Length: 174
Image (cartoon, one colour):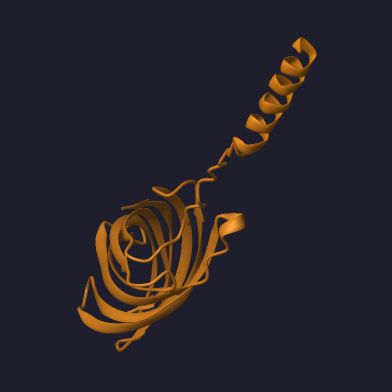
């Protein structure tokens, strides 16, 4: 009788564990967050250099500026920036305000986004005028909030405006 009760207890214990179900462990993997995304507001702080011709004279200068951009999608946005440079080291100030349509192609795995820009604005120094511009650049994202960038654009207009404006700086992303 003891053997029968012991055998019955072992069978019931085995059956109880087999019907208890399997324990489930869920592994939660955080989704990868894109470095480049739609709805970004960007603030640029940069150093700039200008070289070319303006109003019949040579334009060579170094300075800096600020920019603000907004990306409607991951690939397209609008930007505006203002650059102040000193012309030819003679104390004359050259100011360029540009508004651009920006198209970029993010490569998330490399943290890079090459981009192209096209637009227009105003240029003034010894003479004021409207202008057009076209250019391109490269941005490297350190993380979702900070990036480094360098770009160059060709600025053209009346009065012999024919120059290159090159910028490099920090980009803060919100």
